[in-house]
Image 1 (cartoon, rainbow, N blue to C red):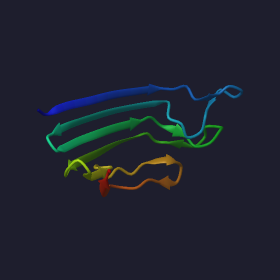
Image 2 (tube, one colour; image 1 turned 30 degrees about the horizontal axis):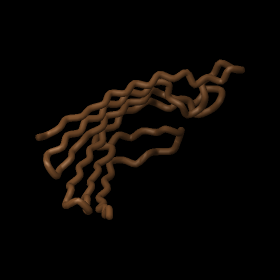
Image 3 (spheres, rainbow, N blue to C red; image 1 turned 90 degrees about the vertical axis):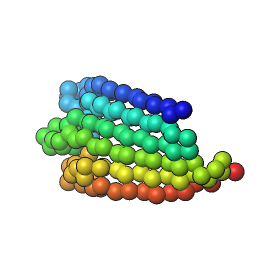
Length: 118
């Protein structure tokens, strides 16, 4: 029988420097993520959507880095009790975003892997 699992996570932080009342650099104060997965016999599939609020890149909060949303997909095939084939597709929407000012993250990318467990 197919099993559906999901998780919703919302983080609210107050990453503040007490002496200056400025936000700590490179920390978003709001993060929301939704993860869903389902198993169909030997196959597992899933998706994750994550949104993060803006952040500042320096201690005086003068350099603001925009927030972003990403979508990731994954699948796994259990070949037998020892072998597992994994596939991941990250940043499905090919979103250009930064977590650090002037440091771009990867666009859409994928990974394939095979695992052996004794």
